[in-house]
Length: 304
Image: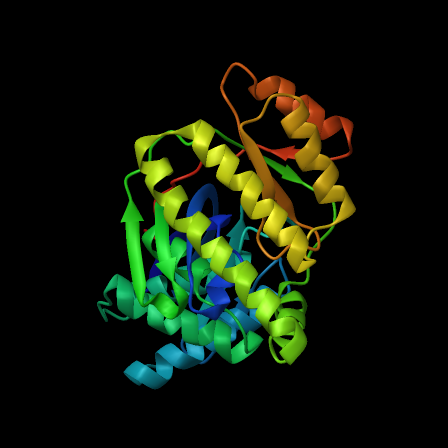
């Protein structure tokens, strides 16, 4: 095979951000916004055409790991296209990593299981960022809504359909690795460690209850758990005034619950709504300066 195009989805964290870095579970959804990668075999030439410059390092690292594993040549032209801006925090680097690995496995006839693609993708991101849990790689590989434990020790798809979510972008790009490293320093401070561990334990309890609520479609309870998760993220110091305002606006407009999604420090918030209140909540988010991003949850994983 000389040419292959595949796509992989972005992601949104529903519950458990930051705690998942410290061996606790989270719940993540793949989203309908996707990244497409086309790889063409071009003997003697290696070209990467990626509009989002930061993705280039991930493409190079993923190709390098694949070549090392399978001893294949590097005469390739790799073109990436995205439905979404890397500003949103939808995990574009992880989606492009997974799409590249899947395309390489197809073009070179080296079948890989989903877990093998996850392991190579997770190694790619760790080699570059040095920190991370791998949940975004898992979302890109498996799709759907996933219960996930650090490093892929547990990757369990949840049967959740029709999650009534609204997503609001704060207008500020978060620097995820920096925020994660800042929390790591807190964990190394004996005075702050106990408080931070307690917050993570409480987040874990919320994740476990949210898993049940999502499967049962008990949106009211899931919304309450979102609010609890957001309070704990504020205690961690990762929320911002803008994200708080967007969450408060959504709740005032009748949302079941609202929280930041991802690292914090910017990027997006999410809110759970009834269809009756959806437009009212969207307007409330826009009124305080947020940008509503139209997406669907539970999207399919990497595919050709």
